[in-house]
Image (tube, rainbow, N blue to C red; front, side, top):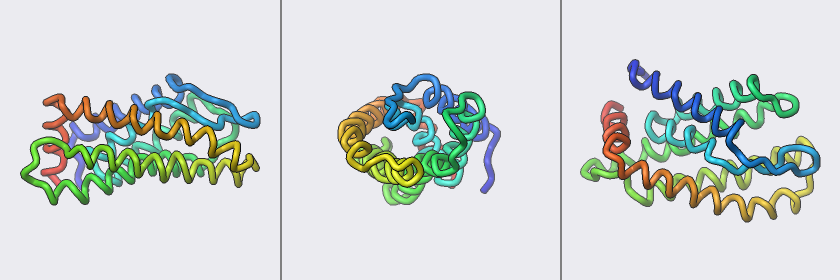
Length: 185
């Protein structure tokens, strides 16, 4: 698993962007005295790292975003459960992207179903299932209080992430970056 200087710089850039967007540019909605829902584009940098560099570097990016973000702006005690969810935001898209893309070598643009399928699956697994499970078992927040707001926030984030990725996919620099990173694997 050899990483080039360019890839290392981009991973570091995605980590920095992820920390800024997650910790400082998100709408936080408290539930029961703790941050229950966070709406923003912070996970998008992690998802992009996973899509571009695969599940390992996507997971690494997600974990680093959470750990560095916690050091810079702690919100309560450190919870490794949420480092896991942050890492999964990079792992799942990386796994999907690096599993499906080789099946379509003739496609010059990232397929729409790959973008939307990746976003939907990642948001459902991480944002709609795992995060509420952790909040419920760690803090005892009732399921109803956790699930109802996510029925609203999950579709909003899916649409937001999907449209941003669709827009990025149409830019030549992103498209060439995507295909150069997938051909080197």
